[in-house]
Amino acid sequence: MNAEGGSSGLAKSAAVKLSEMGERTKKLGTAMRDPHGQRRIILVIVCIALLLDNMLYMVIVPIIPDYLADLENEQSEHVHEMMHTNSSANSTIQDKSNKDNLDVQIGVLFASKAILQLLVNPLSGTFIDRVGYDIPLLIGLTVMFVSTCIFAFGENYATLFAARSLQGLGSAFADTSGIAMIADKYTEESERSKALGIALAFISFGSLVAPPFGGFLYEFVGKKVPFIVLACICLVDGLMLLTVIKPFSNRTRENMPVGTPIYRLMIDPYIAVVAGALTVCNIPLAFLEPTIANWMETTMHSSQWEMGITWLPAFFPHVLGVYITVKLAAKHPHLQWFYGALGMVIIGASSCTVPACKTFGQLIAPLCGICFGIALVDTALLPTLAFLVDVRHVSVYGSVYAIADISYSVAYAMGPIVAGQIVHNNGFAQLNLGMGLVNVLYAPALLLLRNVCQMKPSYSERDNLLEEAPQGLYDTIKMEERKAKKKNYSSAGNCLPVDENGFDPFRAQRSVSEESSGPEYT
Image 1: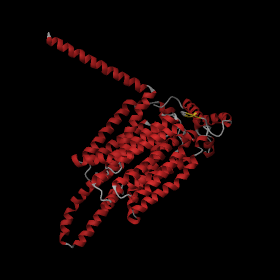
Image 2: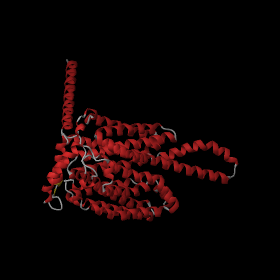
Image 3: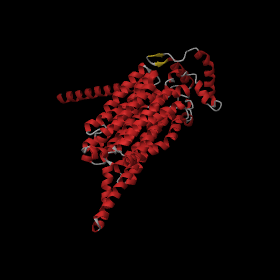
């Protein structure tokens, strides 16, 4: 009887657990069907993708130089034995030549990701505008997974170079489509700024935590483990994307409006100003990352752990900058240009003070200032790009965020190659003073964005940029709607009314756009 009672109790317990699992699955399914719940899950998926991409970008910083140096030593060991009978002067010259060659190899390897990303972004932006955001994101995650596995098991320079370049291809799809998907799903300006701010916080966390993460695992468990861990996370994120969004079962993309070609967006003066600011503000970070460790070693005799966690304290002011900008943008959305300009001034001032630091503790302050300023610029200007597309072009965001990704890639492609040459020829202090001066001088250019809040959703400024008549049914309908609405907007004043959610006429125009373009893209 006791045995029967025990088995009966186990059966009841199992039934209860199965019932609870069923309820949880049902709740998850309900949340995925709910638009608000689904976009939260999408935000999580995109943030994980951005975190992975930036961790992959920075995790090699403490690993690859040491690993390539070991490979170089093994390959040249026989040569050194043969040269042992020669003079010490010849040996010294050969050692210096090998070191210079290794530095060039490391610089090219680091820059290859950004260079390929820079080349692919114009094509990926157009592709995203044509097919939607979900399939390109899946492509990007798949390519990143493959490149991470190659990094884990690659044992020569050519293989590592191929993996790094392949990562740039994946980033061109994953980063652009992920940010564009957030802009598309979060249509209210305050919600969009908050969501993009969360994404930027994940980008910052991935970039800053990756070097100590990679260095720790590399030292204690070897080169493969950091990349295997990241590959597993990438695989899980891809499976979540397939489960939640189901890219290949989506049929609503046929009703999507045709996005503005990327070359037209590039010649838009407002978008050009924002793209220039994104490039300039990221130059100090991109140029310091490959040069600051060597400078710390020679000037302040820093230890390995200090060089490894150089940027980690800067994560907290970066998140603080994102938080402050999101809050200020919700209350004063017409001052987005000012937040960006202020961030560039802070970056410039902080960059100029880096060479004056004599200890690791002193160095933390300007590095925190640089990351705080970058947070202000990125958090203010990334939502501004989506707003400019909404009021001046068609509300499809793949190409405009491809331009933003190009802006970042320009800075990070030049960094590993150009920065070292500048330090070699002019010195570390001149490099920082130059970067600081460029940021301060560019800040007034953001004054051109001060009237962005006055732009009416009538697309009148876009009409002036068009060199030809509207093409296709979508543009023809929109032009007719704009003509009909011009009379209504002519008496609205110079600036759109602002409430706690942003711009009322802007929301009204977007609702018209959504009605004309079919059901919401999911």
